[in-house]
Length: 116
Image (cartoon, rainbow, N blue to C red; front, side, top):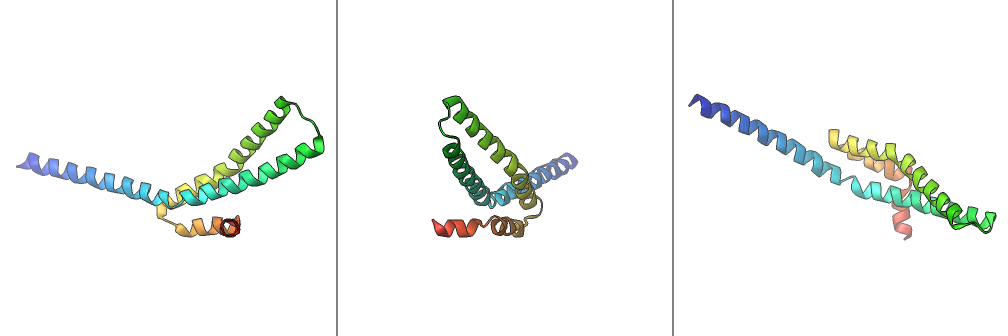
């Protein structure tokens, strides 16, 4: 009988851990649309600036154009790393959806969606 109680306690702890992990994953889904919108905005801005720069520079070789695109991708990834990490951590650790709203306002993501 004592073994059964111990096993029931172990099972209960496993279930509790699984529920916590599931809730964390579920909360993280809230942040995905904001991260996607933020990445799209940064990519659109970078694409526009690359086009403007290429027009000013004139004819570029394929390798030069490829280098500019690599630079654009690297910059976007570096700029988005910390905001993305912040959003994922804030939502998964405390369920702070206010942080999502703040980022959306800070980067004007909702206005961009309405303009399309």
